[in-house]
Length: 266
Ligand code: 3PY
Ligand code: MG
Image 1 (spheres, rainbow, N blue to C red):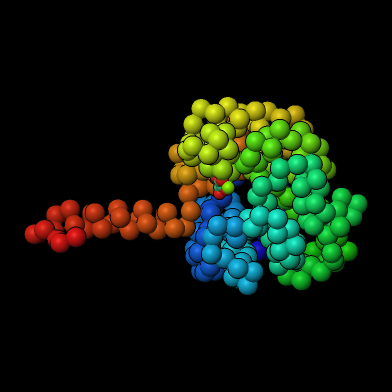
Image 2: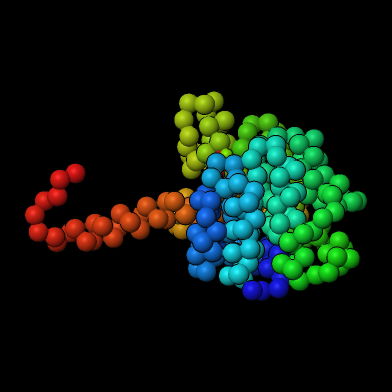
């Protein structure tokens, strides 16, 4: 196990190359570990729409660390205290959905940063060995090392973007392209790569850079992640465990059946 996986995320975000991260919805540490053993830079555990709970996520963080990678957790809406517990469990960063105002951003930072940036409560249970630091050194390093990432996925969040980015404890933003496109289309349709979304996305990248912070994006596959990285997104997720498994299963079964004799009933 690497002794210092937690710091790898913040370090990677200051390097030139974009970070490509796996996205995990299954509550099974072996799945997160298997993806971590591929060339992903980090693994995101989705506790908002995925099936993970606190115990499953805590175990997955350790399994991902076994593979020498950092973990980011996507918390459920408004559950900043769970995010804080998962930082104690060894997460290197938090993606928080539906951060729509300066006040939302301030509350998020309060739970994820120690004073003076926030009010995170002291109890770095599993994160100490995963950061390679002892208590006093961790206290000094944690605010810079732990990434607090606010999701931009509503019209209100776009309107408040500069306010959100001005909150010192917010390190970057993450666009949820499905929700943001639904909001921009007034609920008519989800067009996560539609014109309105891409225009907003370009503006988010520009404003984020102006604040000396980074923008990141949920991406649907590798080519999409490559395109979004080229547009300036510093951290791009790539597909998901469930979609990768289904795609591989379909491809292998199609190959197996391509030349099999006879027709199979559906
Ligand atoms: C969205 O696209 O709305 C997301 O939250 C991505 O997970
Ligand atoms: Mg969303």
